[in-house]
Length: 483
Image 1 (tube, rainbow, N blue to C red):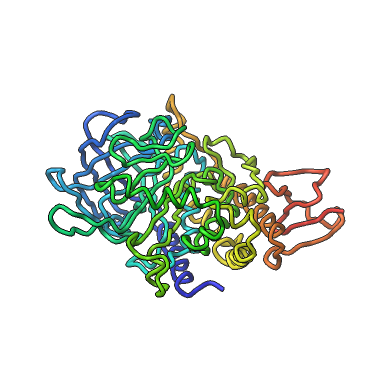
Image 2 (cartoon, rainbow, N blue to C red):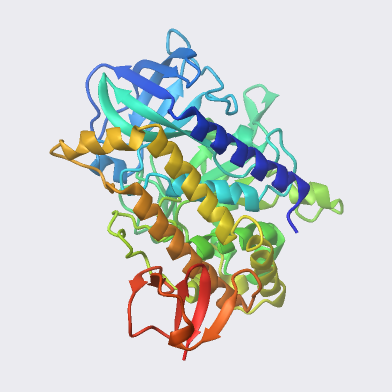
């Protein structure tokens, strides 16, 4: 059963999407700074001017830098970080943008490898409905980013559709701040680590970078310290190092992690086939207060010492790939049965831990009736499709890049592509049901070919098929077993 809080959040999100569609336009963000984007640029001072759909304008000093390895290959439409600053650029300046929470650090996601420019946002919207933090926060227990689509100009040049989103940080996760003890002494409490880093060149061997803000724990298992970055030291890395090195023990994982949180993340990756988030890739781990005792008799106190997993970079979801190769009805065919072995801490699964296996099945049974239902996923895809098309933003972006020598990944016919992705997910839904042995949402029909409707059929990877039919296929939202 969907909780009242999740139902309200889902209703609020859908209402927002409907309002966007009615507005028939996107906010416009104009970024200005000296020079142009380069692959290795450091934070550069500039200005952001955000014009909302109601005509209101916000102009603020900001710093800009390209983010992510992929963005460096797509300078015609890179993703970048935007840090709001005071007039002299010396201090952070929090601001609420487009109704989102007030913060100083923002992401402008160029979505250069996603041909429909919405996979990351749809996947996070689903995650925010499905999974919440195992404790209360000022933001309703949200454990993922929130975002709004905008059209971006950089130094007066049009860059197309972007997603402006907040960041995963200490405030969102309600981590305890570093505490000053006096006489130059400090106590580190909340911790936030991000998997993956470009700050260590040699990731073959364990070690740190020069200022201890990045660490390779095992062969090609490297992390960045997101908080408290200003207090980096080997001691700050010890909790994560221990968790990674001892995470091969189911008893350790069950003691130091929230099983619900891990199971929800695994279901999310499995259901949406998030191909770039297996193993130690693309997620955060946090501890609210590392000074707490995991063995405290008060479970509330003990929980403050446990790790929480938060997803990141979900742009390879819904059949997508890291380089945009999957489109036009041909999508990633990473089977559900293989993904389950690639969760960040798979020991509970591969060891056959009954508590965890039952929890996975329960999470899918709950999610398939709510956040992961075929209707919910389709509704989100279609709402963003309508926003892009009715605002004219998709046509403007396609026309712009069709005339450019260098292009990101996109499709001209967005409606067709979104429909194919939605059909792919119908097949994925059935594959999840088959894996977990659940039924009752999409009607199963056992029928001879003569009794099957004549509309286009899709295989379990969402690809259009013709006769001879595979033994199991999807047509008109129903799963058929041919005989």
